[in-house]
Image (cartoon, rainbow, N blue to C red; front, side, top):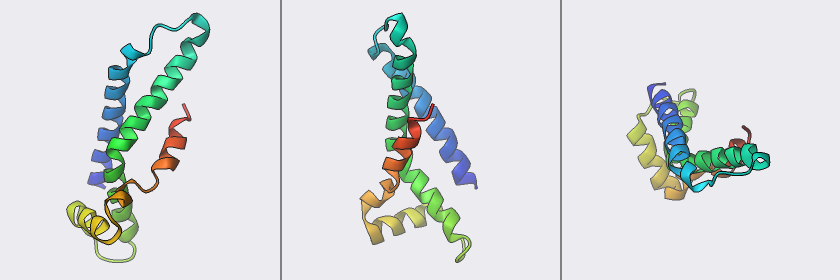
Length: 105
């Protein structure tokens, strides 16, 4: 539970950080495009944040799912197990679904 809370805080912080870092690159849009530009900026920031935090999210989900089947494992142990058994790209499993969800404002 503690790892999940930390993961949520980090994800939200990085989304806000990317939003603020990217904002200057979204030029001042015309009145008609202001809302669309802000939505695109939010999607862009959420996508970058997801790419950065997805490994931690994957590990947290695996820990939560494994608790019902066996004894609880720690974050580092679960991380190592995923990388060893499935390879490092498995840490980004579910990334595309997360991107689709980031489109929802």
